[in-house]
Each structure stands twice: as C-alpha cells, then as structure tokens.
Image 1 (cartoon, rainbow, N blue to C red):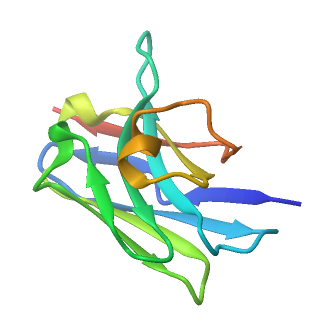
Image 2 (spheres, rainbow, N blue to C red; image 1 turned 90 degrees about the horizontal axis):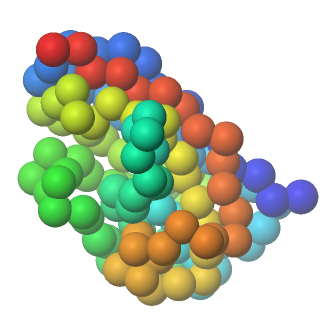
Image 3 (cartoon, rainbow, N blue to C red; image 1 turned 90 degrees about the vertical axis):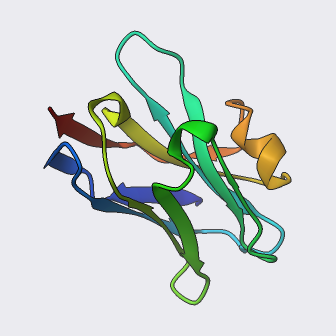
Length: 125
C-alpha cells in the first residue's frame, strides 16, 4: 500500500523558517520523482518544487526560488522541503506527491499517481 505522509507544518512569523518532511512507503522509489504542491484557500493547487529520487535533479517554481530547498534521503525514503524567508502568501496546505515523471513536467501537473493528505503552513504578517 502506497503511502505518503507529510509532517512539519505549523504557524510561523513572516521571515521565519519551516522544514517539511514527506515519508514514502509501500513502493520502490526507483524512477520516481516526489514533489511538493500547495493549495491556498480559493486558489488552485500549484507545484512548488520537485525532485528526482534517482538523479537528484530539481525544479522550483519561480515564487520560491532562492527561498526553498528540496532534498532527499533515499535510505529513509524521505523528501524534505526547507522553507526560509517565509511570506504570508506562502500560507497554504502543502501536499507531497509521487509520480514517474520528469521533475519539471511533474511540477506543472496536478493529476499525479500518489498524494499525501497535506500539512498546513500558516505565515503570519
């Protein structure tokens, strides 16, 4: 049974930092990419950052470049999203997803194979 479990969300002040974790289980990670997506109230879900588990190649949305860093620990089957210099517009539910796609393609799609249940990130001004 495939599972993606997010953790690490919370309430943080403007300019603060959070690290999200996505723990994967139930499938072989070979050839998969894992991505972080977010959905704010009243807005569509959007891709934030994606990483290839085999190659380590990454993709970032323009809105988070130079502030967010995605990384992986394949031994732990976990992908992290380090979020620095957070802004109120980063407030959203953050989801991780897995699929057999190239990272840039994956981060521009929302119809993906596997999804976690999400973790709330709230940035106060």
